[in-house]
Length: 109
Image 1: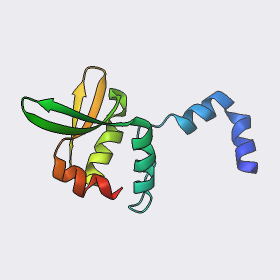
Image 2 (image 1 turned 180 degrees about the vertical axis):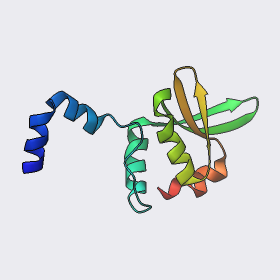
Image 3 (image 1 turned 180 degrees about the horizontal axis):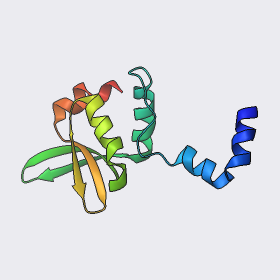
């Protein structure tokens, strides 16, 4: 507690909170922590799309974020080992469109 008080005396509360909460990359996580984080992240930012393409039923899972957060999506892609990350204007999108990958990989989390 003394360290925090001393830190607050030398920097403003705005600078402290900005440094604490404005991170470009997620906090490092081990393989046991990541699934819970991913489930919560999907709950907030993920979506499924089912559509008819010519005479085929297509399924797609997506997470769309601002392009400044592309590192987050690349970390998700690296962890899962499937999907792709695409820039789309001011957004970036993590996409899994392979049904086998959706069933075998994403359903585990």
